[in-house]
Length: 231
Image (cartoon, rainbow, N blue to C red; front, side):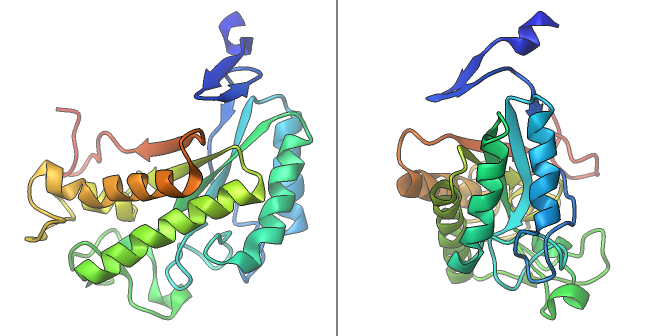
């Protein structure tokens, strides 16, 4: 147990201990996606609990595709004041602050967003709603949206950014042979399925600089036939 309380460095980022609060959805944002006072207090309390790193829940990088109406947004500069207040609340209570950035892909719902979900391929997921296949041009636009969101995270005062590539969301959908049946440069073998997530990492690095920590959450096993596995 004593090792939990040893300092650790992630690149140039030093944590006071090895305890990390992972990103978990709270649905505490305001209905317009701005950070709420209740959300700030929630994370401030977790920072006061002693974790070395507190990661804010998945934050939407797209203005019209999101997982829930009360999901925090990082898709526009108008969300910056709330995000900055949130990062400051975490850091002023003794923890380092990170934020997870996210696109739901086919796990969005038109009942919430008013638009059809998008995905690497037109294959329904847990929801029966059929997504629309993204064009190559739209994929490049989303890469830029992820990069801009990461830059906002840095400018808002977060010490690190995490790309959500797990749990069947968009980046995971591209990785997975179960949900990615594309025949272009973004689908096919493992290398081509990984192209979109890897290009995002590259573009994020260009935006945030060489010394800013980039984390990546990945589902090693999707537990569905034909999906990602450990083997």
